Image 1 (cartoon, rainbow, N blue to C red):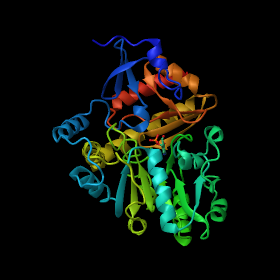
Image 2: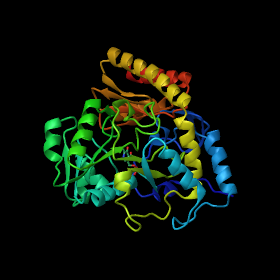
Image 3: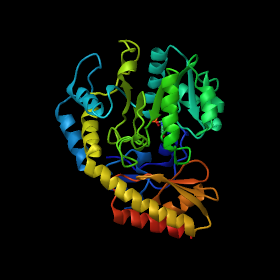
Image 4: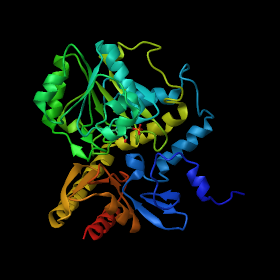
Length: 388
Ligand SMILES: Cc1ncc(COP(=O)(O)O)c(C=O)c1O
């Protein structure tokens, strides 16, 4: 028999998260269910992880099949089928090879190492508003001084340049020193900002001219979130490496680095490794998630729902003096408020709608990609009431 949780059970967890709200015990579709049976409409989706919603038949079936094989983990020293198939599937959309890891931060750390090995240079350029993770190099490339300061010195040689500033970026990215430029084509944590296509085009050109690796961090905005497999697709720009994570494993921890052929050829056995990355269990699930998300009909549905949601949020922004603007694409949206966002997030939760902040004044909306129009409508109505 399991005893009920006590307060000291909760305080046994290290206090790095400011956890709020009820104890969730179940999930179905776009809803989380609390221990008292209350249902919460979830526009957070595990922070853009649960792309196929809760209790997805795709994920469930893949998990059961993966269990049936008896292979939860096999060392990366040996061949297994799921990881090879997943790498092949990912590289259908990007000419190169895949490295699997366990999180978004790890994917970026690995990409920096590959960039250094290939370029034989050391420095990294990132942009204002960026978030690339909480490890020593990814945190150095993250434009959150409050997250960075207590842990300095971080990786040296990282410059943060104003997003969209072509002159500053031209000065910062050099043939002599810059190993990598990292950018989120749609910034997530930094406030949901779509980077202008022209800026991505410029970065591609500058990186090619200076033999610098261009990394698109699509950990949050990638894999269908914005209505295309890669968020950078509409700009027509292909980076040297993509980093992916959040939705890839269907909720299981998984990250990936897609590396183009030139950089892949600079990487040799022993240059990088991780015990768990791309094991047969997670890779089986990720393959089915990827196949589901890359279906053109699935992506078209994300775009259609996103256009509808964007129109509603723009209407809300036009009508409410508390909202400055709506920004986003597909099912990744931010509402920039003229006030601090956290109390609005709390008020929405009181009405059983889960939304997130993205910086101090932005409400972030990243629901499951499988969410229905009716559910979106219900959530927008709650937001309207909260902001009335
Ligand atoms: C764009 C981006 N990169 C990297 C990360 C770090 O991912 P993880 O938390 O899996 O380490 C995040 C997490 O929010 C992210 O949004």
